[in-house]
Image 1 (tube, rainbow, N blue to C red):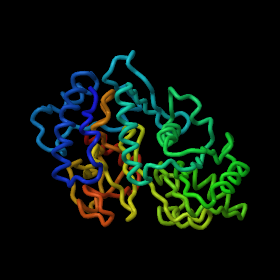
Image 2 (image 1 turned 120 degrees about the vertical axis):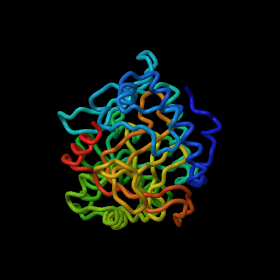
Image 3 (image 1 turned 60 degrees about the vertical axis):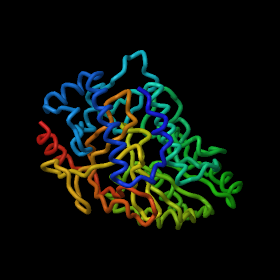
Length: 357
């Protein structure tokens, strides 16, 4: 069930909400029906809610599943022989990890969409790339962690790929200094997980009283603020620290998850996250799970027309967020724009689970 190639060619931030809803609704209804037919676990969930997919008239009516289900079940809508690649979420030792099964068609569509989204920010020219991680995290190309998938997904946007860390997570100053010496006067791209950039690059530079001259660079990072919120590091402080130790003013976060690889939400120049044409978000009340309006904090539901090999097209996340406006962001991108507030606490997660049952 490949994605319509005409859909892949659409401009990613030019459609206003009503236009976008029209495109997404039909695609997501078809996808829901496809997974209903092909995935027995998904079918049981939909049947238990007495939902008639054909009668859905609004995106907010789409059935969703908690993202945590992927940690406990092998959810897929393809036979095993069609599995092309398996992705795993990040997690601490002893935790169940999400398993995401991709066929070639889904993996290809996700790659195409990722390129379109990031070219909007980075342009089409490949840049010298400094990767704030170590090379062993991408060693097995058939089975990736979330970290590995994030790096490989961005790999094609760079050249002269240089890893900033050793396998023991220590700073590889030799690699970094060679990169800086060669590209100090050239636009470069620095990528990595938010927490890793902070702990293993910025804090180490601070301890060693070092500064790097990379003022022509752009930092693209992801992974959220959960680990940093405990030490009072927010987005503004993170950006000011990047400027202080690396000399970089262009710092962009992006929100995404292994359960919806390809559908990433990139931070614009105004500091807001934007859903591309291929995906969207809905904010739901923590207790009732009903859709709530602009400037209210609730649980983020993400929808995407990309997941074909597994039922990840409509997911209730474990993150709280706020939609700040629709079609009127000062950056010029149309559609909703939003921010992430924090992760749900365990007690709140149990509450959501109770509401779902």
